[in-house]
Length: 220
Length: 266
Image (cartoon, rainbow over all chains, first blue to last red):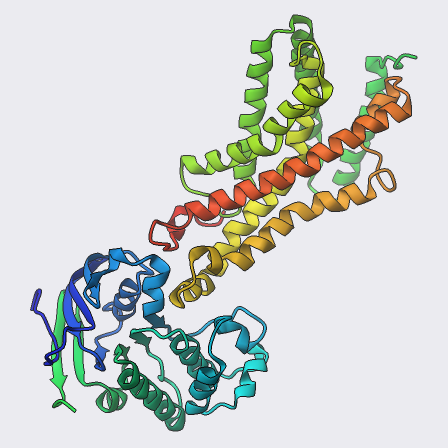
C-alpha cells in the first residue's frame, strides 16, 4: 500500500499529484487527480481525513511533494497556493457583517449571480446579515465564496453532511458543474456513502499508512 | 520656596490610616489585611531603596551607572509586559517582544528627549534621564501590555476565522487585518482618553510633585505637556511594534498559524 500511486486514467497530465505526503504520524500518502475528477475520501473517524485536507491546503505543515499543474507547492506563494487549492471546511465561519463582504472586492458580479442562483439563492443574499444564515445556507454560501475565487482543486470537508436531500443535491450539482466547466479536481471527504456514489469518480479509503482505492467508476 | 521636609512621625501618621484600613478589612471579613500590610511594607522598602540609589546616582553622575540603572528598568518593564499576558509566548521570545517594544516606546523616546529637547550638560544628567525613562516605561507599559494580551487571546480564540481566511487565499496580513486593527486601537485608546481629561479630572503626579517642590505652576505644566506628548507617542509606537512582532512570530514562513508557540492560558 505504501507509496502506491493512485490515479484515474487519462492522457492529460494530472491536475494535482501528491507523493509521499506525511504529517503528524500519518502517511505516506500518494495519489494524483486528473482534470474534472472528484475523488471521494472516506475512512474511520480520527484517521486524519481533515488533517490530510489541511496539509494539502498548506494550513498545517507536511512533508512530501505536492504538485499542481506541474509546479511544486513551494514554487507558489502561500496565498496563491491556497487560492488555487481551496479547502472548504465543515463548519464555515463568517467574519464580516454582510454575506457579500466575504466575496473578493474585484469579483465579477455576473459570475456571483450565476453561482448564487445555481445553489438556490437570489442575488440579494449578498446584502443579508450573516447572523441570519442557517446551517444549510452557510454551507452552500461557503462553497460560493470559495468558487468565486476560481480554485483549481477543491478540498471539501464533510460539506453536505447533515443537510437535507434538496440542499445536498444543489451542492453536488454545483460542484460537478464547476469541475467540468473549469477542469478542476476535487477531494470530497464524506461519511455519506450515497453522496460519494453520486459525485465521486473514484473513492479512496484512508488508512494510517496510506490510501486504498476502493471503487472507480467507468470514465464518463 | 522649599518642600516641607517630612519627618518619620509625619509618615507614621499616614501609615496609621493604612492600619485602620487593614482593621476594616478584618472587620468586614475581606481577607485583605495581610495583603494590605505586605504591599505597604514592600512599597516603603522599595521606595526607600530607590531613594538611596537615586541619591547615590545623582551624586556620582557616572554615565555607566545611568546606563546600568536604565537597563535594569528596561528589563523589568519587558518582563512585566510578558507577565501581563494571559496567553504567554513560549520561550525567550516572550521577553524579547516585551523588551523591544518597551525599548521603542520608552528608551528611544527618552533618549530623543534628552538629546534634542532637554539638552542638559551632560546629556545623561541622571536627575532628568532616570525620571523621564521611569515615567515613560511606567505609562507606556499599560498600553503595550493591553494590546499584546488582546492579540494573543484573539489569535487563539479566532484561529478558525484566521485559518478560513487563509483558506480563501488571503495573505496572512489580510487574514489578521481586523484583529490587528482592533488590538492597536485597544492599546492606544487609554492614553488618548487620559490625555483628553488631564488637567480637568486628574492632576498628574509629576506636575503636582514639581509644584510642591516649588516650581512655578506654568513651568510644571510645560513639563507635563512635554511628558504627555512623549508618553502618547511612545505608547503608540510601542503598541505597533509589539503587535507586528507577535503577528510575525505566530506565523511560519508558509503563512501557517503556529499557535503552539503560545503557552496555555494561566
